[in-house]
Image (cartoon, rainbow, N blue to C red; front, side, top):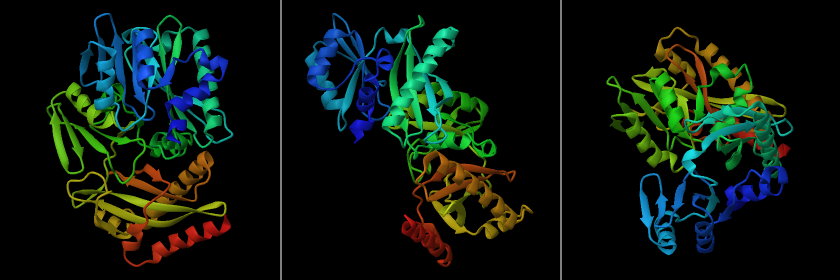
Amino acid sequence: MKGIRGRYGQHRILESENGISMHLLELKLMSASTFFYFIEKYTFFIIKPLLGPQEIGVAVNEVAIEVATGSESIQFSTKEKAYDYLNEHICIRKHYVIQAIPVNPSTLSHCRYTLHRKSPTASWKIVNHLLINTNDISDFNIFLKWKLNKFLTSAVKRLGAAFPSCHTIVIEIANNGAGEFWLTDSILHERNSKWSQYHALYRKRSIRPMLPATELCTKNTLLAFLNIYPEVIIKPCVGQQGRGIVKISVTADYAYEVHEKQNRLVKDDYDQLFGYIAEHYLSIKDYIVQQRISLSELNGCPFDVRVITQLDGERWLATGMVVKVAAKDYFVSNRASKLLTMEKAIFQLESGVSSEQCAKWIEMICKKASKRLLKNNGGISIIGFDIGIDSKGAVWIIEGNYAPSLSMFYMFGNNEIHERISYYIKKHKKSD
């Protein structure tokens, strides 16, 4: 199944249409024979896993074969030695593809385009344009821009038809500055992707002000966010229970502090920081970067609100709400030190805000977000929202989870909330 959804499967789908295939680069599953074939045919090519962000560059000349992994570059005298090294040390525990590069990669500009559709029947729209290197595709004339936009729309229509549950797709385009462009990558962001969920919610204007600023995490976007916000969060596009979430802060002396779980370290400059982030996080999964919301705190520990919404017929109900207080030295509440009712949490804040009003406002926001996510994805009957309240009392939608853990409601006080949630789960199953 992964092979079908991975790079090779997507390439096979796209190459079947002439108007798209002319902008594709030769791509094959990696083996000894295909590796040797690419060495004989191309001066440059790249190796990627079927799924995931890893990328290995290969350059061939008369003297040697150079393999660049990002952290190191090694030269080999024969194609056999190069393949054996890759097979034994780098391309392990995964299946890989090999993709041609038409020219010297240093001469190419790369841009990522995110295309999104609001519902399964809606049209695909370009909702994000992300520059990967210093060159810009905006140098294209009007005709070439129209040609590129038409190509992008055709490509995602083709992929969207093959993967009907996917409503957000990222397409990477390389161009040579002379009017030629090629599709170098396509990444499906399914409904469990935070990048897909962000765009589903962002399309609703009334929800938009409650979303933290968000972008795909690259060297350029991370630096841009750190230039705007004193603290940012990076998190994997697909992940649960707070794993892989990192807070990055700009220190008083303009260094960078990296904070994951209870661990902290400092990098002296941005190149050091990004090298560390790329090696330990971005090389493993696709990430987003977000503005960090300055959450309200209880006894020096930040907290957020977990809200369960459930579909009852055609209406959404808020069936559970609990405040999660982060453990000491943690910046996220996935590791909670205590669980509180909204009434107790607001009382301890001594903010003068009515806990009843706050709960009603949060409930209304979550119901509205639930309707939007259902329209985008369908097939959803329960969502667990993490809602933040900042130091000024503003409410933020941190994220929604379509398979939320319910154990905290069982452990919290009496079982009334858990029983209510369970009732609507059983009721929905009976109606299916």
